[in-house]
View 1 (cartoon, rainbow, N blue to C red):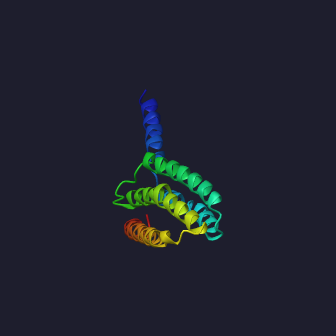
View 2 (view 1 turned 90 degrees about the vertical axis):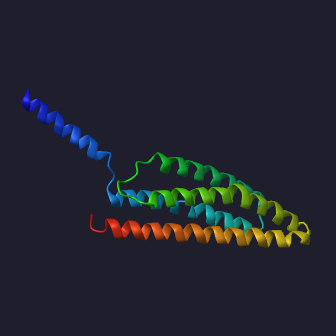
View 3 (view 1 turned 135 degrees about the vertical axis):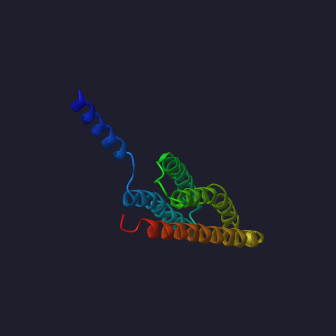
Length: 158
């Protein structure tokens, strides 16, 4: 019986430790979730630059859906003990991208379509949205870089 208890305790310990992510895998999963959006960003930029606003709207919708899934996946993920901000920064970054896809790009596509059809009065609104988006992207990048640097410093060599 004592041997059985030791074996059960061992399997329980292994099972519990398997659910605890190691820092490298944890970091990689979070960064992959963030970097996976690059494809859609590039597609969006390509569609916008080519003035194909129908395609841009399709890309925007697909991107917003993928962002929603990425956010849900990260929120379900177990947080690494002593992670003081990486998961949160990634989650907030993805939410910021989703807001941009849902709101800012939607408005930008509508305004660019008007501009393409000859309405020059929308130019100030377009410039305002672009500046806002650039500022948001910069803030997201800075927050993630700061959290990633702190995470790396804390978990280096572990």
